Length: 279
Image (cartoon, rainbow, N blue to C red; front, side, top):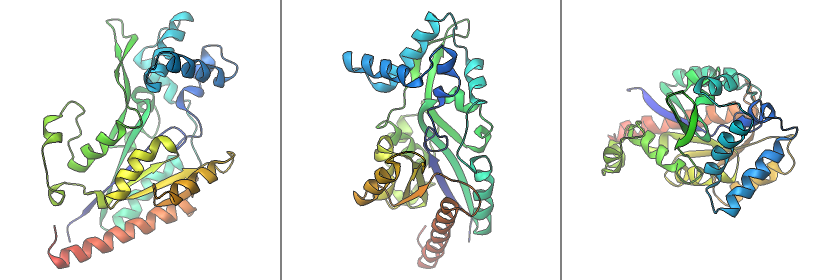
């Protein structure tokens, strides 16, 4: 049987990392003693101007950096990526899942679909584990300074990237091929061989899209965070996700065991499809 290709897609903030990426070094670097103050300002300007919340935080990053006379350059963002913390096991997760897949004749491809910042994620030690990173980007002027959002990924636009992965049209600027009709059987990574991992309400469109088309969606929750487990349970009860797991990616923990079982099931279904002559 030919090798089976599976796509694992992840949100980033609060899914692989316990906080929003800006909270580790960027916001404190602007002089905020409490990162909540920054987000309150973002929410205020978003509501007052009926502004997309993702555009609002990107605008505030530029505004506050200018006010502090700390212009943001691309290399600065990548430097911020080095200061990000992760949930247990994340740093070795991808190699372990790849090894599990290899035993099952499965090639696992990992993708990020995040409302965070591409440049920050590219500066992390796990960046090279992803086939593609879909996240927000800035436009940089002739001095290399971030001046304007060039790409915004919010909770609804996230879904287009699942279709890109499904059809393997990964270039964000290639829209014509993406919108052309392709039968599911002819798509390189069918939905039934997709796994989406997210942490909450902003991931619902992606989780539901994958789930309703035969893939598997997992909502992870931080056991240390109040009400996080209850939120995860509600998403299962509302049939927005298939499974829930603590956000511990360590070896032999619940998350690894769950993904292993999903991969085993994909492998068994692929064998049956081959016997039926389904491609």
